[in-house]
Length: 104
Image (cartoon, rainbow, N blue to C red; front, side, top):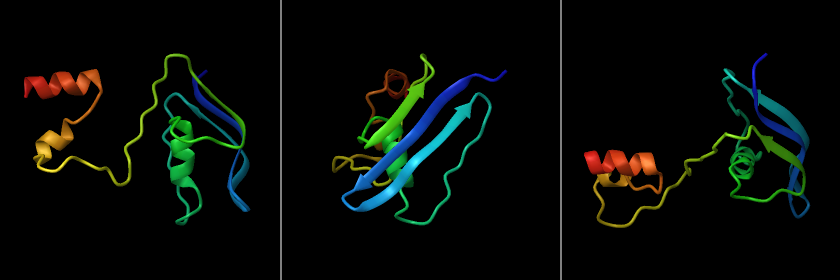
């Protein structure tokens, strides 16, 4: 049986009277490939930010496999002025990326 990496139950997120999603539930299991496809403004980025812990939600629950680490790449990253493309690629707090940057 495949391991359950992520389980979302009855997740709800609203901005005032605007309900982005209400009581959504899903799981992601080992070996699965997942895509989020929906029209603009439907809450895809908000959902990913919630899963990554960067945004709050109104109700529901999110459970991760204990050793799972979640990261997200922003849609519109901001970099300090004057960086080269390579420097921007290695601009990270991640220890592995720092090690690669030092090697390069």
